Length: 433
Image (cartoon, rainbow, N blue to C red; front, top):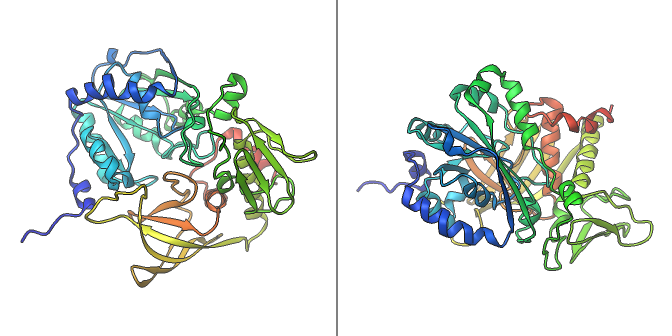
């Protein structure tokens, strides 16, 4: 009897095809407008993608899991292949639609040869590939630096690169929690690079221009626009997972949230967040950061200082380990299946797991020369990584994901700097000397 193929094997064997035009028409004309309407999108289309013949790339600042709605409505019916996180193809509620529209599965922050082959197949067919060069959606409200090698990638193909730039998406549906908070979306579509421009620019110049073009801090944007987002009275839900350090006393993993308040259990410092995402003191004398994104940036600076000044700096946490299924899709809202328990340690030497997996002892170590960030999959209650191409999830027993993420990124930058931070973030490091 022929051995049954796993989901992983099926994905690796897929041949890439451009989306079916009829299915794309139904998606664009009927489904997407209905889904997008409640978010009140406003569009500015500077360049019509259909004026450019042949294969193309579309890139976007990945502020929200809803970004596909704005992109499809600004491309004048041009069918394209989305590049989507590999693990999402194992979730029953997404697998069918992703296959239907011929999306390409990509393992975040890895050299994923099957994904590259599929993108190459689409380009050879004269199609259009759409992806976020950041590697995953925003975690803090502003962009992350693009993945190293993006400039080389675009120079290799030498075809037009279009940009979908949006604001308001993070405030609508972000990665701190899974709530949807309709307000307003502003999105703009333009040609970022022509083939002639790509030929003239160096790889670094291309990457610098992309980082500058993608940059957007939704919290700063809304200080100017003052758009109200409907949080249903629960705007600080899971803020403690990301904003884990008290801005007053410095206590870590002592923040708690309820309704529109985030408060330190160690000193009582409290912050009230309104539906415009503005932050106010709960009591007289409370210390309040300018915005959630700046709160996290200050945490990043503190992590870098500890890394720089303490050769023994370390963090340990009890976790549950999860993995992807082999044959049956995940039916719940989960993204992985429990397979073990253990302890994660993050220090100058790397990222360690020691515990069990499927009833047996199991451990691994990742070093920062090739491992420079964690994958935040749906929200900040857990994280994921790829170990030799295999997807594994880490679910801590306390709200520590924000700290773990910043530690991995800054340990990697301190020792290797494979994935440099933005030039305008240099204050984090310069003031530390």
